[in-house]
Length: 293
Image 1 (spheres, one colour):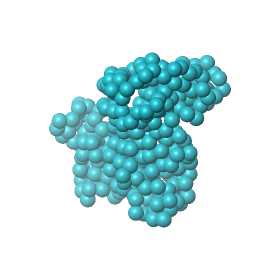
Image 2 (cartoon, helix red, strand yellow):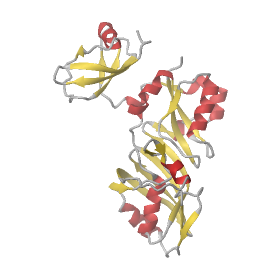
Image 3 (cartoon, rainbow, N blue to C red):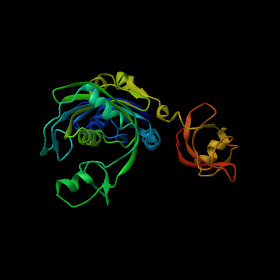
Image 4 (cartoon, rainbow, N blue to C red):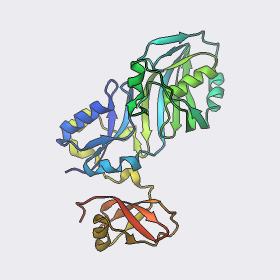
């Protein structure tokens, strides 16, 4: 079985699930998953995990993300993007690029954001967008997100493009909605490209057509997205014990209780994920890969 990550360039019009379906066909395997869902309207970087690497998605999807987003002022839709139905409209103020940049700057830092009702957030086990399409009555709680940088790339006649670097969980279309309100009108996202997700950049992303032509050429190491985790290199004996579900001694200098570690064999092969137990100075196995020894 192939174990690794592919930096896929998702095309507009496809869901992230559609990409996984194509990847399963290309690589002839079922155990494939993705990190960081992109809506059909959006394009760009979609990290896809193959084989045992799928067990690392929760640790590799915490990186900062960068998007380029097109927006239009003067109207709002029920989905907060151009795929929805217009639900409100207003005049567009006479705004300069400097006016918009000034408002954008006010969104930098930690902000409270209410996600779109058409998001993929679970509400009692059901996706919010499914409830929204059924006209169900529900409210999504606000969430704290971080906007590290937001810049106006272009603006003319009520339409523009922004670059946003943000934390995981940020909804760019909801951010644009709020920017429109701050500008004294409505705003709607009309296109979105994710240009970076953690260590994965759009410059190195491969299209499905490129993967079809040479599937093996684009497979990256399974641990590429978790290099920020502390590292533990264990003896073969300790790795065997971890694989059996047993804790092994570990000094853990500089680590806090509960810290997540990536564990390697003496040959520097990824053996799995463990948690540090500071009280007993051991690491306890969490997700180990049985085929490394």
